[in-house]
Image (cartoon, rainbow, N blue to C red; front, side, top):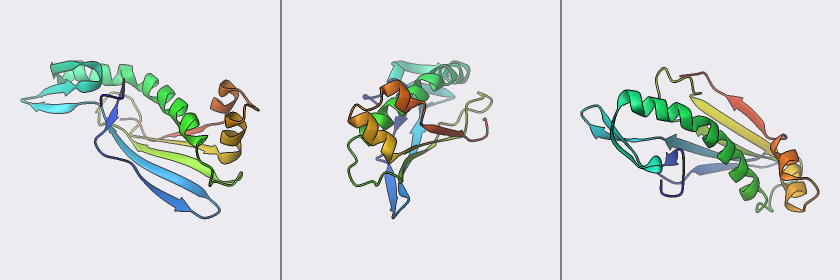
Length: 142
């Protein structure tokens, strides 16, 4: 949580490598820790002992920044992957923090072809050009 400004993971992601398809990283992200008695702590934004309404409001506010940061991180990490073939894909499969009635998706899947990552890494395309080539699939709203 100290490396994030939005949501955080409580453990390392796990991954599956599928030959001639690519690699999928599975992550579960959280926004807060239960402080008990209906109160919450949000370590990424230095909030402690807040009520459910304040927590849910902040979770909703943080979502756009989370998605943007995740795309940026995908490009930066993806350029370091040398084992993917051009037609293979890098996928981030994320289960999002629970937030009933917040309207954020329950899941998020980002995918990008290795060829895009290689072009970005070599400077053949700009970051903005690479970002628009990331496919985004959002699960049902919460």
